[in-house]
Length: 335
Image (cartoon, rainbow, N blue to C red; front, side, top):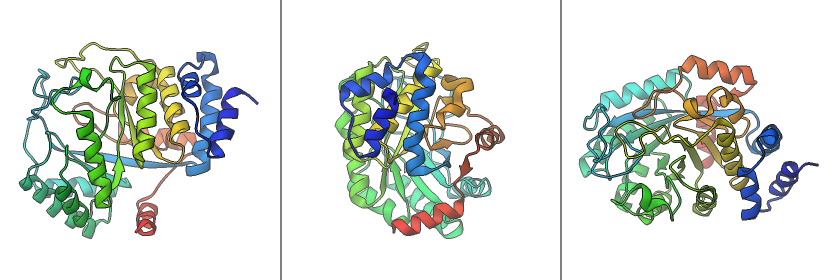
């Protein structure tokens, strides 16, 4: 039995890997990556079979953000040419939900830029979500920035199932990426979401000049936070941001990162998120042997792959898309 299958056997027996073993995953020789992916797939298959969860983003508010996050085209310090607009109206949010429903996408993600939502913005999201749940019954994830406990309660009461707020990087690297809020601000928002009864979603961005130890810290931090869904973003450096021109990633390393998060968080939804098209390239299909969730369509300020290409890729792999009906049944069981 090779090293990776030995680690898989231990994880399937509910043992936690050591940091040295976690580092061995990131330092897997390139010639062994297929064996690593195969071993990680055994964990994915144990918990999710060959099902894939689809997610779609609605960019509900763009730009106009006072924060100074170095990766983001929407931040106050970015000079990237992007569309900026305030929170869209209820009709636009409902149109997006209809599109998600028609495409058989299980989770509809309402994302807004900014430090955190105003009372008016929460009101707008609440009103739209109530109608989305009544009309389509979709699983709704909101990502509106730093959240106060009372705002979390309102979103939960309206029917928001999941709240996303990424830790983005490790605690030790956080101040190199942004100084306008703290790592603990992000952790506290995840805590507020959990306390309200919403499912916590929190992930990372890899490729922002962090060390391998930072990546390991991220994986263990999300395990400690008990995030139900973990989006793994691979930096797509945008011109006009402080990280412009940074290009540290290659497809094989990205596969190793996905495997690391699967080994450390074996039962959780691991989602390949922003930057997958550029950073995984032609190896995107291999990523689905480790992760069990992807975004379909465009991201916030960068374009994604065509919907038809994503569906064709999944069909070629022999994977099954989790249907809206299966998602609704799962939600009913959770409640």
